[in-house]
Length: 491
Image 1 (cartoon, rainbow, N blue to C red):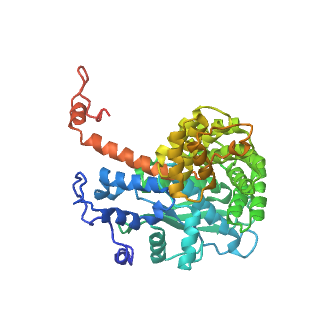
Image 2: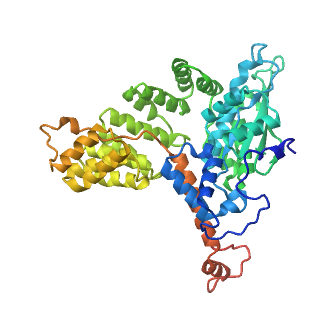
């Protein structure tokens, strides 16, 4: 048992009574007053801080209306997971007496776990969020932590479950041809239920690090969310084993402190194993931040479809193509993303690409973006701009007024509002500066969208389970169907 579990909720009370089994009932102001919404936001601020305000409101409202929040905590959307860097328990390095030269292995294990868990739809905290928590609590990363420190870290980032562990390296026996062996030990801490899992381990050759990480990730998912864990062979087939030196250089790049150091490590990792596209994503981001858009696009196009960051890489690729004035290519990229993830930022950028190409579909896509967040000033501006280019001055003026309500010193919105009031349309001969004022979005919020989608799916599933018509249909076999007790509900 966890030694200090009872102190966890002293300053951070749970949203529900610990007795469990509360019956779900329709929402009313008496059951959930406005202060309840504030408590949801305050209690889960760390999970919601990366979300747009409109998504936060939708998520809280959906949480209350879905009401599994008051039932078993496994159905709660707030099951955020923090994967901590694995501590180095080695007593010696590979070629030096200093074991800290192997610290990168602990970060590599954590990164693989983080990606694997996130790829199954479970909300995981980013590495940067955990780094901030380590600094706030004055804890040293990749050092072995006590149970109390692990729980304190989880409380700091508002994580419900934490995955932590150690690894130990053993040098090969004299005359052996291998590079040594690893023993990885992991444990999952459930801060909400005040318990921890049994320890689980993986052992094998250092060269098989990628395989060990993959199997460890599958076992972790089987504990965190058994219903999301696929058969192990299927899970392991998703990730191609990567060369050890490529994985080392990539991880050292993540740990490097300067962009120049990062670039050197990522380039080396990409050269060592062309199948490994993680370095290409990081290099694409580095070049994009430097406004080297063509180089960024070259790297981002190399990210594999099986890569955890594939759609995010495509989003950045679309921005890089747009910034390079290749609007047709940008349009295709954003359209491809929308097939899977209908985010407002993607609709907005698609509309901007179409606007530059002079396509009438631009206004429709701008409006779809605005539907996702009716209060966003950039979305309002783009819709207004689309109406103005179309000659609908009244509708455009309404949008520009809404922009100025939010951003009073927006000079372009002020200028275009004046043009609308004078009913002055777009004149290509004199309005060159007004041909490229569409506003892009650089925020890619798939994680937030998937949180919301999973909650809506949960609500629909609960509604299906409470539908007597569905239960009746499930309980009565179709005419002519044999009595098969294992046939299930038919759903």
